[in-house]
Image 1 (cartoon, rainbow, N blue to C red):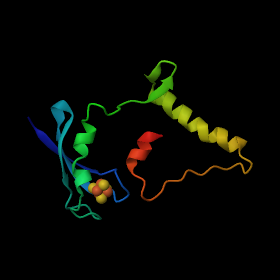
Image 2: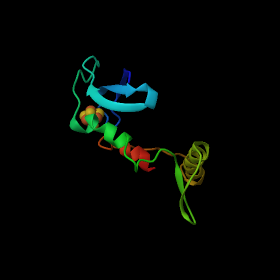
Image 3: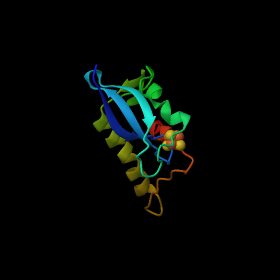
Image 4: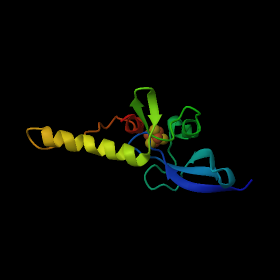
Length: 118
Ligand code: SF4
């Protein structure tokens, strides 16, 4: 089965180390991630977490679509609905805040997994 190499990067932490993904195009499956030696910043560095991202990506419990808590538990919703409702929350808070402002804060040690938690 033909395998293509695709440049990408790790999203776990702010270092965003360069990676090369071996992708089986026919099945749209990432087979392996290797450090990108030509990346201008990480220059071939990648920690164990980054190299194991394939396992996270292919985990059967991984959510591939947004869900919303409803009366019967979590229900699948569209990306359009999820983004609309998430975007509405800060607008509501901005309107109700006495300063009229809102600032999202992300700590430097926060991982990308937190982005999946909102
Ligand atoms: S490979 Fe490791 S150091 Fe690099 S971005 Fe990912 S988690 Fe951070």
